[in-house]
Image (cartoon, rainbow, N blue to C red; front, side):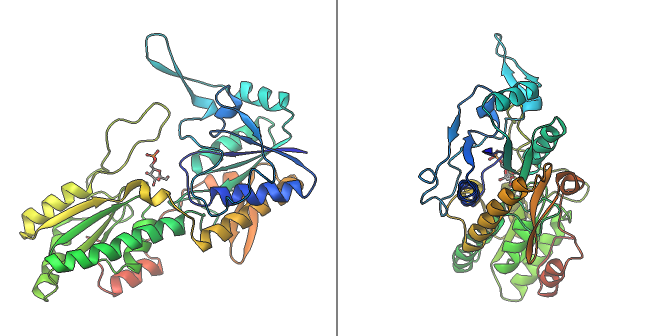
Length: 359
Ligand code: F6P
């Protein structure tokens, strides 16, 4: 068995722990393992396919990022090509990719990625490639698994920021609006906001009304709490409005969400008269050491993915369905993206403890 491993899409803390667990599990079965660099681009003439040995994965479980590198613009079915006039077209290079994998003697692939990479994995499987998926995203927006590695680390990074912002906001009687990642899901904002006892949490699943946000801040002011912390998910939007986008996306890239915390801060200051500042936490949430929870989950996913390969579970992905790691068809996970359920106990408890969702 020659097993290849690839990491695609945005990085997430825990990727290296998956790689390590998969490589060691495979080597201990007597398999040969290689890594495809930069998502699937390593099979399309860009960069390379490298051997993965015990030495290559030594001492990497605690490191953020991915030793295999990654890309969010490497979809082989829509691969960007720059033309001589500078314009960019997209090509279907999946046949070339499958031929190259065959030529390199690759028997099976473990594809670690979010919904985009899992969709690619499923399409490659439909074309006869033997692929097992491992879900990855800090956004926690993949269905079929209770959570994904990277999410807990991102929540802890956001929580650390909220804790620090609290002390300075309180000292200055300020409102501080913190923007966190999550794409179209509000999990990072909700979990960090509740754990960090924010005063307002704005998420895409509950469109907000800015006047309700200001009412909450003013009510706190009247009660002698002269500061407020507002946690905003990058994909949040006002009732009847649309999401905020930052600049142009590159060809093949998803739209870039965000940039809403400063306009929200300006509006709060204008309407309440309270000094209001904003902060975009950005890619800090994707970096750094995975938490113990994420490291363990990632390691369990890596081991389970190799078992799924041994069992020939092509087109399946590993998933956490506590207390077990199971395998489920990738298409089941992709049917509907996971979103915050506004009736979930986390939302109910947030409301019950006085947090406003601006609705
Ligand atoms: O999906 C993970 C994520 O970090 C999102 O939360 C965010 O919208 C996006 O990726 C940012 O991607 P990039 O690093 O490509 O701008």
